[in-house]
Image (cartoon, rainbow, N blue to C red; front, side, top):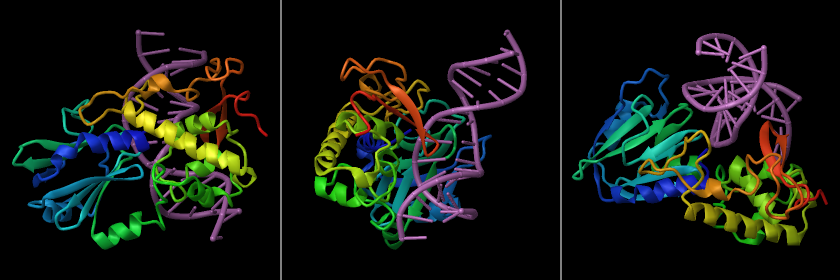
Length: 278
DNA sequence: CATATGTCCTGAGAGC
DNA sequence: TGCTCTCAGGACATAT
């Protein structure tokens, strides 16, 4: 489930495409339902072919190629999508190939479940769709006060609110649990009930967890889905404190054991001893 | 407006 | 063993 650390790792892994020209865009034959591509492929081809890649950015959980025409090609991996500069895990889930010149290399979008999306935006469309009205400030680019301002009025549980990309961009289901554990905040606490000291702990924990996870190139869970741009697994799964560790002893306090609850139809993991309800 | 729920998708793993 | 079933959670459309 690519979240900020995984997507940032993908971004860094493909930086060598900057300066390359797009020679061709190919959709390989695929027995699965085609992934969403906007606009339709012939139009994408027309606008991409011959265009040069100026920069590779990240917008929350999306990888963004900035082109010399200022158009932006946005890769949205969602659950199982990968952006690769190497051989993909298999050929049958390869969704899009972008041939580069003069290197002759291929930038690939691979997606096992096919929930991912690839979109080409004009500068105006990009500002509209991924501007601050639709995508909140990046989780790693916020001050403690800004994080508090973005969330403090919500009646929702803090865990649920952290997943809202319009409030804070980049946090997903896995890192929300990890962050709240480090911040020692119960995931079901209403945002409105958090005290100043707790917002400060939340901000510090967000930076600590996400930066550590980026350093370890993200988390590859037991399904093996996530890979970096060279098709290698991440390492942060070996540092998870609570995620997917139900009934295991809490290594933080050494007393409690990890509990799983469901919030907004998604799993949440926490330690009741480290993260008391109040 | 804010918040809640349903939907898409494939493959791993559980259970019988 | 081999089958069926459930579940995983990104973003967004629709409902409350």
